[in-house]
Structures are given as C-alpha cells and as structure tokens.
Length: 335
Image 1 (cartoon, rainbow, N blue to C red):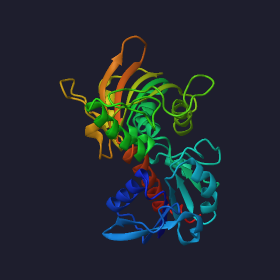
Image 2 (image 1 turned 45 degrees about the horizontal axis):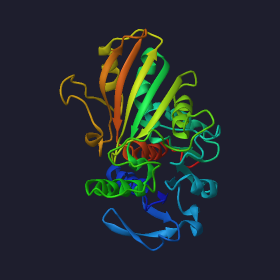
Image 3 (image 1 turned 90 degrees about the horizontal axis):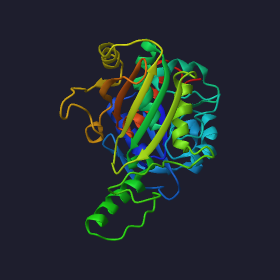
C-alpha cells in the first residue's frame, strides 16, 4: 500500500515519518509532499533518501492514504482533491467540526470510522487528544458532567518557528539584550502567555473553544467543558490541570485502576517529591501520563488530575498513524 504525507518537511510531518518507521505499517511506498519551495529536498526514511515532491502537481491516485500535516489553509485547498482518490487523515482544524467528517482518537471512538462520508478523517487538537484519552475510561465508569481545564502548552504546538524563537529569546535574555517577539504576542522566554490562537467575541480564544467543541464531538455532547489555554516556555509536551465533576460516586483506587488499564494511559502518582510527570519526561513517549490524582472536596463527586503528553507525538503524529492503522486493519481504506 502507498501513502502520501502533505507537509512532510514540518514538525508533525517528520514525526509521522518517525512513527511510521517505528510502527512498521505495511506501507510499500511513501510520497513526501510539500510546497514548491521544498521540492527536490531530501528526507531520510527507512535508511533511504526520499525526494520531496510538489504538492500542487502530485497525482493522488497513486496512494491509498494521505496524511495532511501542513495547516488549515493547505487542507482547505487540497484535502478534498486528495480525497477523490485516497482517504485523507487531516491534522489541521479545518474539518474537525464538519458533521460529515469523523473526529477520531482510535482508543476513544474508533466506531465513528463507520461513518466516513467525504473520505476525510480529522485528527483533534493536540490538547484535546491527550485529554479525551484520560477522560474516556473515567466517563465509562462514572459519567462526566463538567470539566474545568487549564492547559500549559509547549511552543512546538505552534510549529518550528516558535521553537526556534524560544531558544533565541532565552539566549537574548541571558545576555541581557532586547527582545522583539515574532511568533508570540509577548516575550515567551521565562514567561507565560494566556493566549493561544485568536480571540472570539466572548473572550475565549479559538484554542479554548476547540477543546470544548472537540471533546463533545469525540466523547459526549452532554459534557460541559470550560478551558483556559496558556503557552509556556517549554519546547515539547503539553500539560493540563483538569478538574472533573462526575455524576456517580467514585474512589481514588477505582480511578487509578480505570486509567492504568486503558490503552495509552499511565498513572505516575506517588504523592512524594518527584512522584509525578513533567513535560520534559513525557517527551518522546507514546503514553498520556496522569499524576496528582486527588479528590476535590469543594463539590460532590469531584476530582483533580494533572495530565501530560508529548503533543507532537501523542497529540498529532501518533494519533494520525493509529487512525491509519485502524483503517488498514478493518479494511476501511478501500472505500
């Protein structure tokens, strides 16, 4: 089977290649696509140099599955063209709330793949992806009513340029030099910015509304969720402080058991110095880590969690490849 990756030269595109190589999917040929600026450059995959091809002139009838990892504008222009000949797995936000496009985290709602109408499948926001993996087993047991989440997101969520700028700003601060932000609204080095994506009229940012709307679509429309999303001077991995109100009573022991037994989750909660996971430790891991599990005594059936995951891997590339793997195993890709 042949596949294509649109945006192969970017952070997520390269990470998809890493995951494909590690997972050893039954892929015969990989076509790496990007803009004309990157055409002709070489990327290593499985020990061989692969030439980057021009997205605008590529014939998608050559492939069965196409990964899109190049942003919403590129998906808007090219995804439906690609979907005429292949199944598209789109990492951008463009199709996520389209009622005819399933929004998939395979561990949570792979059954929604039975409803592919446009030959397009959406990958959720990286913060949503790690959140719903932890929420799913808890919702199954205790039924979630309401969630309050504050995110602490790494700069890699914005792409390679913000990562480079964080490194450069850090050097400038240590040299006591003036900083002019290019990819952020304020200085990011040694700072925290409570602003990711554009503001809406209600005062929420689009990133915050993505978490609300996507969680409802993936998990349960009856769940109420409010979010505050913050950018931190961290290169990779997103963290989330999550307060959950359940309909049913629970025990901490049952919560731990439910999380630890769910695919993709790992509880690290020793209630001692260092007995929790930080963004640095989550980087490079496929797991969604849950720490700081404790009962919220201010409400009935409330609990607090700390959730950390590698946003480039778990929140984007790995989820996309797992969608493809699910399609292949269930022979959906031929539709």
